[in-house]
Amino acid sequence: MWPFSSSSSIDSVKAEVIHAEDRLLKLARRFLLPSQQASSLQFTLHDTPIPRASVPHIRDASSCFASTSSSANADSATYTIHSVQVTSSDARRDSRSTSTAPLVLLHGYMNSSSYYFRNLSGLAHHFSTVHSLDWFGWGLSSRPAWPKTLTTSEAEDIFVESLEAWRAAQGLDKMMIGAHSLGGYVAVAYAERYPQHVERLLLLSPAGVPEETPAMLQERKQQLATRPWTMRLMFYLAQRLFERQYTPGTIMRLVSTSRGYGWVSNYVEKRLPAISDPEERKAVSDYLYWNSIMPSSAEHSLSQILKPNAMGRVPLVNRIPLLKVPHVSFLYGSHDWMDVEGGLQVQAKTEEQGKRRANDSTIAVPPKVEVYRVNQAGHLLMLDNWREFNQGVIIGAGGQATDSAYMPTKLDASLLAAKADGGQPIRSYNEMNRMTRRPTGMAAA
Image (cartoon, rainbow, N blue to C red; front, top):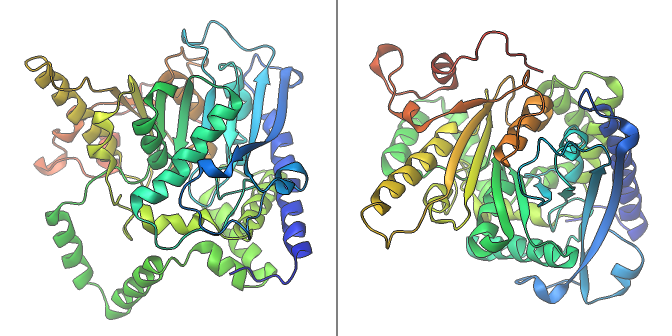
């Protein structure tokens, strides 16, 4: 439900988002590599029209909010995908892989394209072009009314086909895709359907990787049964709200601006301590808040794709080994709430599949999978430790590191079988950190 009474109210919120985006992209020029010059960077905003017929399952486009107020809205046959494109005239050719494919960055749930503002400049120094998109239904891209009864496959269809329509409109043959959280889940669905357009896939703390086994479900139920009744009630209510597709945006649109903005500011302060500059913190808070109260759309896909415990309804651990993409990299934060074991399980599955293929040529060639940990970072690793995150993206894309002082830690599936203190399998990040300490002298942001 949109709480404002007129289109002018919606336009005023959109204007706030545009203003916050502009401030973040100006701040992006601060996050440079030692050899970079801010004057070498060019930032270009795009609102790319895509055919409405290319996006399935949207039944009511009449209430669609789109990013532009001119030709795209006037043409009822199109939606728009909003993006920022970054190029650098002093890009390092020696650090690149042999590919000239652009890097396409895709955000996660309740985020938008400029959430990568700390990364755009440095990555443009490596890649020929960097595109960061607002997913269809998010940010300043078109926001049609989202069908509430979609299956997981149908929800995936909307994201996959709108991204493919954007790629075709941009005339890109191959892409290096870097996708965060829920965006990572959808990027896998895209790579399943259009592998010919994916040079490499970089999954940045992706959601929905592990599979919840009956034993895991039973253990979770037993743990919940030991909690106080008040906690069990809160868990039940949260689950019911999730299943009924109530979202953070639903709440934000119902409370006053002062209260909602206060919540967001507190979130940024507590969740992103790496952002200590008041100007930067204010710009991030503005961007998150005004985006959160834009007309609701793709935010309702969450319960269609994930379970209430953030497990995938169609887990990626069983899908990635079947991708016809040559290389997949995982990046996780060192204190990430997403489970790094998901990435390591995928790596183990692909290695086992490769061994079986040696004796049976009918088995598909699995992608090569690598898993990295970005130190001193949580789930929002691109903001927590932007230098090391950038190095991880460059390495995952097949390039050479541009700054050896900020290197992510490479993990291996053998950690799954390793024994920590007490002879138990590694389960926590503290245990994994002890098993994979950084070499002395490595710096962290």
